[in-house]
Amino acid sequence: MDAILEVSGLAKKFVLHQPRPTVLDVLENVNFEISPGECLVLSGPSGAGKSTLLRLLYGNYLASSGSIRVRHGQGWLELVGAEPRRVLAARRHTLGYVSQFLRVIPRVTALDIVMEPALLRGYAKKAAQAKAEALLSRLDIPEKLWSLAPGAFSGGEQQRVNIARSFMVFWPVLLLDEPTASLDDKNRQIVLELIEEAKAAGSAIVGIFHDAHALDAVASRLLHMKNEGDSPHAP
Amino acid sequence: MSALAHGMRMDAALPADVPAMENSQALMQADGLCRLFGPEQGCQDISFTLYPGEVLGLVGESGSGKSTLLSTLSGRLPPDRGRVRYRDGADWVDLYATGEGRRRALLRTQWGFVEQNPRDGLRMPVSAGANIGERLMAQGARHYGRLRQSALDWLRHVEIDISRIDDTPNAFSGGMQQRLQIARNLVSGPRLVFMDEPTGGLDVSVQARILDLLRKLVRELDLSVILVTHDLAVARLLADRLMVMRRSRIVEAGLTDQILDDPQHPYTQLLVSSILRV
Ligand SMILES: Nc1ncnc2c1ncn2[C@@H]1O[C@H](COP(=O)(O)OP(=O)(O)OP(=O)(O)O)[C@@H](O)[C@H]1O
Ligand SMILES: Nc1ncnc2c1ncn2[C@@H]1O[C@H](COP(=O)(O)OP(=O)(O)OP(=O)(O)O)[C@@H](O)[C@H]1O
Ligand SMILES: [Mg+2]
Ligand SMILES: [Mg+2]
Image (cartoon, rainbow over all chains, first blue to last red):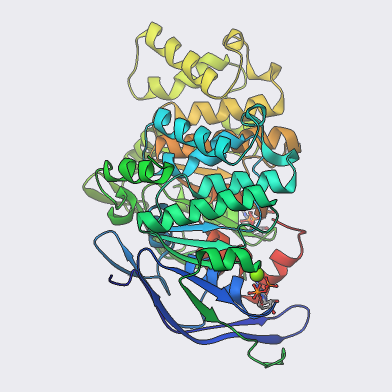
């Protein structure tokens, strides 16, 4: 299958000006490509830059150099240096991202949060709602919580709402940062099933999984990342 | 059938994969705008392009020039140098080179301006209904029944009890006044709305309600917005992209979450680190 995401020569350093000038060289010369239906798992010690890489792929962090090309619509989009509206369009249609924590918005209900990606793509509200309810049930969120804002939900419930949201629509590229971290065995199993279904439907997945069981279950390939060795240094 | 296969089918039914905004023409363009009241007081070297449906946030410390820039962009304050162009259908209008009549017409028909203090944006002596109807009347609407119906619809939209339609805004709380001001601005279907600290003077729970309302309306109406705020949480919630101002200049610009999560400029890093978590 042809690649859908191509990363080459990607580097990221953080240049921090506060409280004193410091440079963190986190990623250097990262290269990989991934095709639909594959799951690439990022592995490496804490601080190796796994989350940083996912955020770069989502356009949330700015690359220091290199290239991230993603197939979007009819063509290819170079994410490094892309205009904000292009990145946002890619996020609406191509790039899905599951953060480790749900960002709660005051007054917005769990159901609305889950439906949003579908509504942004122009789905009819009824179809979106039916799908959102099916996902919330499948992820074991009690029906009485659906119409509440998740601010007061438990950590695991919030994370499951977050996961329901990201499986609302089909993502050509899906980025997962420890999606199973705060879940019990039963829910972890459900998330692994959702990931398998996404792969089968043709999503290309880049993920971080700490537990070995999850990793074995979903990984097609591993990308080993190690600490660059450089400690933080002055510019 | 699995949930995902179902998702695929819904996707396949979509007309086009690339949304309109992505390939549409610019709506507004600023080139080298400058308006100074003193050294680094005001705004200078401001250039950017705004697209239909985009929400652009202006953030920065007090006195950095956010309100000055907003006034210059919205036809209220002529620049010393540079120009602002706005696309009206197929025409590009140079805001300060065109006649006063055209500029006023734009302000009345295609733009809205939500003031920080609702008293500056409302007509306090007239009823809520008349406040909403005014811009429609300025656009030529005369039919009383229809004006009243729009006023009722918009009161509902902004969650004000419709029994208050004949009350003057003096009798409203600050949050209600702000929601009325939003209704008054949006009723005429503007394409571009300027907002200067729209939730500035309100307490937190009232703010949340107005932000939620703005978020919905911006999306439903496909509005372009230029929003001044010093509150980065508000910027995170509403803006697609940000321009960070300091001492009259833009020091950093980009996608909102990128600016807030991976700020590059020393001043932006200071701004972001000085709040707890947004
Ligand atoms: N926004 C940021 N600003 C400054 N430094 C950052 C930022 N984000 C990450 N870093 C730094 O980059 C390095 C890599 O962090 P990252 O979160 O990518 O590691 P990780 O491999 O995901 O680790 P873990 O397994 O603990 O989640 C760390 O030193 C971290 O402090
Ligand atoms: N009409 C005016 N005459 C003289 N100086 C002015 C005038 N308007 C603004 N200034 C000055 O220009 C600078 C920028 O003011 P501006 O109101 O644009 O700041 P701001 O970023 O909106 O600040 P705030 O967040 O406090 O509202 C300030 O130093 C201000 O005193
Ligand atoms: Mg991490
Ligand atoms: Mg101001």
